[in-house]
Amino acid sequence: MPVHVEHEQFQQIGERLLNAMDANNTERVQEILNQDLSAVDIAHIIESTPSKRRADIWKFLSESQKGEVISHLSDDLQLHYLTKMSPEQVLEAIQDLDSDDFADVLQQLPETNRIAVLHSMEPEDRREVEELLAYPEDTAGGLMNPEVLTIRANVTLDVVLRYLRRQSDLPDQFDSLYVVNRNDQLVGTLPLHALLLGDPDTTVREVMNSDIEGIPAASRDSDVAKLFANHDWISAPVVDEKGKLLGQITIDDIVDVIREEADHTVMSMAGLDEDEDAFAPVWSSAKGRAVWLGLNLLTAFIAALVILNFEDAIAMITALAVMNPVVASMGGVAGSQTLTLVIRAQATGKINASNYLWLLGREFGVGLINGFLWAIVTAFVCWLLFSNVQLAIVSGIAILANITIAKISGALLPVILEKLKIDPALSGSVILTTVTDAVGFFTLLGLATWYLL
Image (cartoon, rainbow, N blue to C red; front, side, top):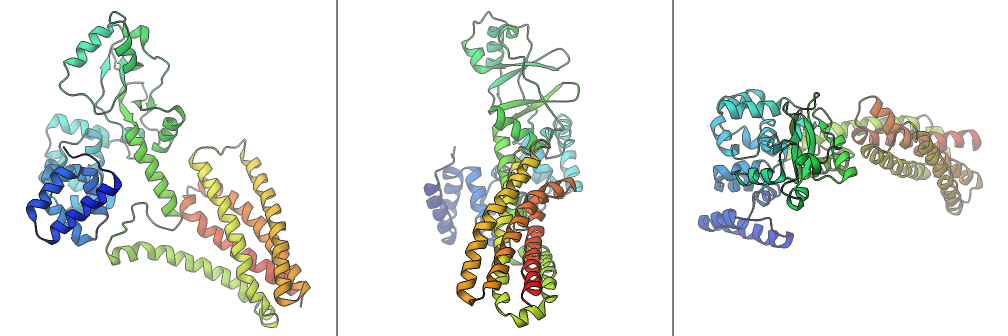
């Protein structure tokens, strides 16, 4: 059974795999794929190679391997491979996956393909998967695995142990058993350490943890991730509105949520989808980035129009053309610092009505301090370069104003965008750049027109 390998060893195995493929050594390729690499490793290799290589690797995988590998691929690649398979092939590939992983893969398919695969399933299996598909992918219900071990509170620990020994299969990851009543409503949990260390004649009710509350199935995955982080959970039960136990979420699912949120934040700031494929074909990558570049061009023209209104001032004092990008750049960096800080605080749930005004005031203070400091430095350098005291004063004031306004804008924008149901990570940086450029140019050129001309 292949296991996940260390990074350096993985790179060496990956190179051997590609070399074997180049040499058309089919036997060696099969040996590496079946013995040296896990499904996670194969998925990583596929995502790390150009499309032609991907097609070659995919041909060597067995149907059972394809199912495991697909579950570890990005959404775009999952869709790419699944849509090329018949419903019967899809079912054969993913039938051995856990129910939650099975449902996750099916959600990537177009509706007609998904229905066709469901119709190919046994009625009992289909009902279980359909119950999972009823929940959006980004909710607790979409994350949960319905395969849980349940017990009653009135039985002894010895009975529970004998019950576990009779099970032909146990969940891959579990640290507790869930205690339910006759209506399958959650009443508590029995940690494994309490089961193993407790007196066999003790009842479950005496040692169970009855303080835990189930996570509502409609809870957003980001909120669930915060609960796991705050309480150091390994697993947690999911319940419906009546408290009925539906399944459990384990830490491996939460790691995926945290990673996806981090990818989303980082990639969105550059206008990229979190599933942006580094080895996608040229045309598909160009299409995905064209819209963002167009938006940036539009905002750049807005800033350019500000400069156009002061062309007489620039023509008379050419040094203003030199100072323009300096002022705009300082504001942009200062604003980005605050924007990133506030977006991160939003993501971790640390911003609320009681502390936001304090944060806004703090950033205003930081802007004033940094603004004064770098205004003095800018004015001094400007005086050294151009020997013009008035221009140095104007440049310093523009730096002070732009840094301070940038700090306030960086704190305000994420909250305003969130209220408008717009992703701050996606749109915040573009709007902030427009604000800092326009304010910087207007302040510098406006003051120059008023004070110097």
